[in-house]
Length: 338
Ligand code: SF4
Image 1 (tube, protein in one colour):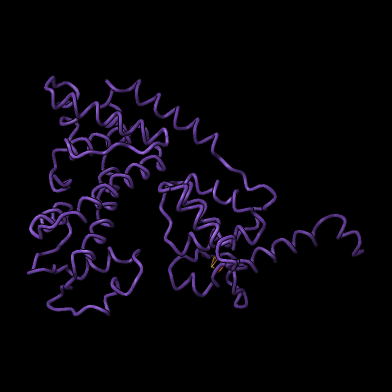
Image 2: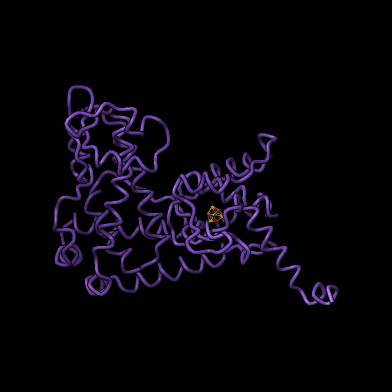
């Protein structure tokens, strides 16, 4: 059964209470399954998600995560759940079931014959992070404000919508309400949180000889978002890896840094980093120019005076200038000038 966000009952603390205080086999299973999923995710293992009681367990986990209140942990859990529901959706062959699944999370899509018609606003909104021409509106005929897409494309829109709905749901729970509703699991929640924080501390990587105070705002923002548990768009990841490598971090250090990302996958990250840093391809890639980052909406220059110079065209240039200014301002350099 797919996860349906259209029902209000899961947002009500009385529902949480009914699961905690009920004595049926189902209620016991939901509690047990949810506590296992959350503690596995906090330990850094892959949670064993199964179909049984999936919807109730998912929402119960959301309440627990609201109590724990660690954004990277919440993101990691939501990503695991997202990957599970997407795998199920990809396996689904019945177009009616796919339609029910996407409508269940509030995506405006209607089954045609073998394809689906998506409201163009939803199409634009959920295709933003997806790359490829198949996700650009100009490559689709638009009729009556709707876009016709194949199920493969629809499933990827569903993926994005799922993440948005999950975060919206999580954000809609007030923390005091969550703590109150989950009093019975208070000890378990505190110990999961403590174990999780201890593990994060052990995994924390410092940037070594690299001077992060000289980073341009875009790079600082990517690092901040990653530490907060936000999944970076592909281009931002590429920029971050190529930038950090160019300013002196080794591939091993960069991989270790990505360990804190919510969707960290050792094998994929190692491959991508080694590719960008030239160990696989033989080509050492440079970060894109500012204009490219700006057109991809991942330039965060704000009011930064250096970024707002017309001649500043590249994030690496920013770092070099800041480093040079620093050298010039050292007491020795100032004394030599005199
Ligand atoms: S102007 Fe360039 S260096 Fe500055 S934040 Fe934007 S992309 Fe980064």
